[in-house]
Image (cartoon, rainbow, N blue to C red; front, side, top):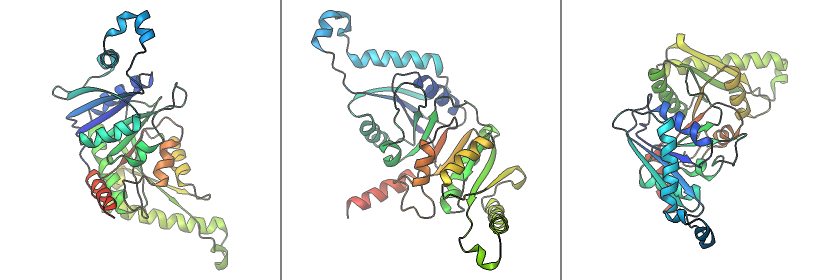
Length: 305
């Protein structure tokens, strides 16, 4: 389990901000957050002279005007425990570059950003922010519900999966949410050689996957009676599609997964499955857990090569 004490929320001054602030407010009831940075990056903070001449009231610094807009949104949508440090940061330049740099400077544990399906603007995900951030990432869709009653954790029975489960347990303890473990299995291409049909060997593989899942439940000290198992056939080698479909089908409110699985080198590089899940349309928030300290050490090692 990785503690989430310092949070950065990326805002773009659209209606998406209202959803992000409201969801962040909900998270303060679950996580013991010390500081929240509401971060906006404007392409330029300079106001053309011609505009200033026509509208002299704009002489106030642009960053102060933007800060006022964000503060009004916070007054309307943010309610957090007393003592939580709230900061508004306005920067100029490339949003992803600035957020990545600031998240390292301020030792951010979690970056929260939005995914738009219908609202104006493209948002920050998918992109370099999700792939290169050293800390965990939470993607909140524009129509996500601000409640968590069932958490789905896609697992491949690796050590990384156990890290995601620990985070899910923390959320479950605070919200009472049920945990559902989701695993996809495939059917080996040579099944016909032993005289079995595809359907017959699919059931055999499903049985093995379920047995492995039950063993995994015991290893992670989950309560078997309270843990839902979702075992899904992946017949087109698209596990991300199955994760998204199962999350919708089983009415999950949050997906928690790590950025790498059995074949990952380091979670500083977002895995292909996690990347695809983040980019898929839907109303379910996705939390990608990253080991910040491990990532920074791995990046330092790469830079020394």
